[in-house]
Image 1 (tube, rainbow, N blue to C red):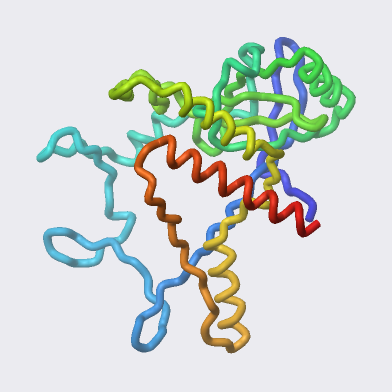
Image 2 (image 1 turned 90 degrees about the vertical axis):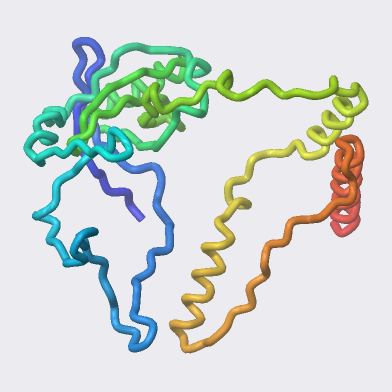
Length: 267
């Protein structure tokens, strides 16, 4: 299936303008259900209802409010909030280039592809230069009445733009209480290292599916064909009698070694 652009803009780097198209790099595969009346199976819909009277209210009759204290709300007219929205623009303004290791995984939020919108030579030249220099760009843009900051990077010969979270959304590790207790036993550390080595392998994305969604879709397909029930294997966490860290690590390591030995014998 050919990807469709969801937005067009101009990538601005200094005095250079590069027209681009924005494509979503991820897809929402959430299963969406309709609500039905339990008795007659007719579709139902949600309504806004007054807390005081219980009467239905149209959305046009509502106002937004922010809770500032337990018993106080600050109300806004739509025009007040609309006046605060960023002005529409098509510019993706590159502010600076940084090393990729300056942006850790906490900051990444949603990925987009940037495709060329005309000048393919300049586009692929920029992607190649960023790859060779091992740099990412910090960029800002406005899309659909929302202001974004993102990381521009080269990915498989193309440009990728990853929306970043804002500074006030990031929780620093220093906010977590330091662990208390006894010092680590060197044997425990060594065994943990063996466990890591035993599990070391390549990341294969296709192995990590949403199993619950797969089971739901299987049930949907069966019901759509007139079937009734589908056997569902419930998830049960593996129980262990070991309470000490060393015992847990030993059990895990032995289990992995046994599984790999059996798998090797079947080849």
